[in-house]
Structure formats: C-alpha cells, structure tokens
Amino acid sequence: MSKSIEFKNGQLIVPDQPVIPFIEGDGIGKDITEPSQRVINAAVRAAYGDSKKIVWKEVLAGKKAFELTGTYMPDETLEAFQNYLVGIKGPLETPVGDGIRSLNVALRQTLDLYVCLRPIRWFKGVPSPIRYPELVDMHIFRENTEDIYAGIEFMTGTEKAIRFRDFLINEMGVEVIRFPETSSFGVKPVSKEGSVRLIKAAIQYAIVRELPSVTIVHKGNIMKFTEGAFKNWGYDLAENEFADQTFTWRQFQQIEKELGKNEAKASLYAAKALGKVIIKDVITDAFLQESLLHPFDHSVIATLNLNGDYISDQLAAMVGGIGISPGANINYNSGFAIFEATHGTAPNIAGTGKANPGSLILSGAMLLEYLGWYEAAEHVYDAMEHTFSKRKVTSDLFSMMEGATLLSTSDFADEIIRNIH
Ligand code: NAD
Image (cartoon, rainbow, N blue to C red; front, side):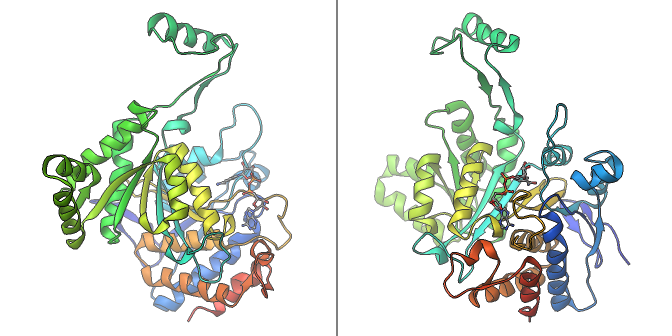
C-alpha cells in the first residue's frame, strides 16, 4: 500500500511504496519527465522485484498549473511537498511580471532547503575537456538560503540607495565608496547558523560515504567577516564537533608552527591512516583553477551561494555538461528534499526529442540513494555508463562524440532500460 515517507529522530522512514510528488516542469520538462520515471521504475524493479515501488503523484507548478488553475504555484503543490517530504521536479520557467516570485525560490524558501547538493562524476565514454576525467568525483554542497540568494540590493538613484549610502557614510564612517553618487549597493548576509548547518551536512556526508576530504571554498581573503567567517566557523565545527573523525588544515598549520613541518606531516598521515576526513580550505579563484588541474585532490566541497553557482557550472562542464548534471535541494534537519534537473526549460529544443533526460534520471538516482535504495540507484548509474560506452547519446553529446548513434529523448531512456540487468 502506498504511504508517505516520515522523518523521525533524524531518520527517514521509507515505506515500500512511498508516494513521490513530481512537477513535470515547463519546456523540455514534458519531454524528459515520463522517460525518466520509466528508467527509475525499471531500476527499482530490477533491484527489488515487486517488493518496492515508487508511487508517482503529479503536482502542478509553472505554465501547466497556470493553465489549469490560474496560478503558477498552487498551495496544494507546496502542501504536497510538505506532506510527502521527498519530491522531484523538472525545470520551471521564471514567470515575468511584478510580484511573481521565482517558483524554485518559493519551494526552497517554504521548505528551508538549505543545501543545494550537486554530485559531479564522469561516465565512461562521455566527452570531457580535461585529461583525466575518470579521477573526478566531487560533491558540491552549495549554501541555498543566504549570501546573494537573500537578494538585498538597492538600485542607484532610488530613495533606498541614497538612504543606505548616507547611512554608510554618515553613521558608519565608510570612506571607501569610489563613486557615491552613482553607486548601486548589494548586501550579503552570511550567518553562523546558516554556515554551520551547511558545513555540518557536508562533513556528515563525507563521513557516511567514507570520502577523504571536505574543501571549504571561500573568498575570505577579501570578504573577511562573511566568507572568512564561513571558513573559520567550518574549522571550529570540525575541531569541536567532529574531533574524532576529522583533521583540519588549521590544525596542521598549528602543529607546524609549534613543532615543525615533519611533526605536522606525521599528524596528517596518521589522520589519513585512521580514515579521518581532511578539512581544508581554498580561495575560490584558486579553486576554479585547482579543480581543473587536480580534480582528484577535492572530494566534498562546502561553499556559499555565489561561489557555488560558478563552481557547479565549471565542474558540470568537466564531465559532460548540463544535460547530465543532477541536483537536489535538501534540509537534513527536517528531511525535506526536492531533487531536480539542474538545467532550465531549454525552450529552443522543447518538443523536438533532442533533450537529454540524463540530468533528471540522475536526479532520480540521487532520490533513490536518499531513500536508502542504493541498489536501485546503482542500476541507474551502471546502465547509464553502459549506454554511453556504447556511444548511444542524445543530440547534446552526439556532436562531440566520434562514431556515436543519435537517439531521441525517449529512445535514450529506453536504451538505458535495456541496459539495466
Ligand atoms: P537552459 O538550461 O534552459 O538552456 C541553456 C542551453 O542548454 C540551451 O541551449 C538548451 O538547449 C541546453 N539544454 C538545457 N538542458 C538541456 C538538456 N536536458 N538536453 C540538451 N540540452 C539542454 O537555460 P536558459 O535558456 O538560461 O533558461 C531557460 C529558462 O529556464 C528560463 O526561464 C530560466 O529561468 C529557467 N531555469 C529554470 C531552472 C530550474 O527550474 N531549476 C534552472 C535554470 C533556468
């Protein structure tokens, strides 16, 4: 019998037939949703026979919702995600017009989905611009509620910008505004609570999956009290709450200062031998270079919102691009999670059969892992790799692969299903 997933004592309780609400999405959402569900259903069947099954429940959002109900995000949709805890969505167009919030932001804010999780891995056969794509295995934890997502900006010339400027100059003694008469202003809040819960989720993820490191990526050399504080709160958290499971770069530097480099290195090797997660930090611009040159040095990445935006796109491009980049928005304290294709609605190819359903399929595999249905998720990963290695691809990858066979959205999904053993 179908049932809702529950969250008790920090654990998801998943019935054998969980109800999973889904939003079809706008544009290519219609093209990729049904084929993706077919793949997920086949993987669950291959793993568990008839003993487990996902019960898909469509909920409305975006253009389809507007046409049927007169509103882009009906209350019932938000309620469904609240009631059923875990859901999945296709891309949604941001409606143009005053007073209409981004639908994605509405979902994230209502459920306080503070982690944007993007795993970055390479599938054999997929064209990549880097030399050793097989060594890429990164997991981005991007903060999802603060920093630029808080969206505090004042346009130059407006009353608020003038009042804000005058407050800064007259009351805060700020002297560094180069062109005060024509400046717009942006403010980015970064809190200790918000930073700690994000970095904590990243560290716990690394511990549970036995991953070697967490890299805190920040621009703390310039923005000391926001990005710099993010880094320091991360180190404090690791050293205070995860002392037995982690070793930090800050501890390394402290030992080096007090006892010398050899002693610090010995501590680092001992920590690695004990399977401790190494917590380190890298400045954002250096990380963009580092991750291209030495991707194998980074495993889990914890970062603020704007940095995470840049990093996600670069890393996705390293392993095949937007068509196969899955994502999830998660609140690990309440269990709420919405898995999603990370690309947009791709209106230029909607309805043509050219869309790659890979991003949504892999988001579905992440959902299976979140439910603890790891065997089913493995079936998806294996079958997808098998399909790529046979050079059967959709049009986004076709032009980059020699000797490839071009498949439509639906045929690509069918080919993956054929490769599920
Ligand atoms: P986009 O991701 O829709 O498209 C960028 C390019 O990538 C296009 O050339 C498109 O054809 C291609 N592409 C995207 N997904 C693909 C896939 N699965 N297979 C093959 N090719 C694919 O970005 P955009 O054009 O900037 O945005 C279009 C709309 O999507 C906007 O309204 C935007 O607000 C919205 N959007 C929604 C989300 C979301 O719901 N999470 C994310 C990004 C953008």
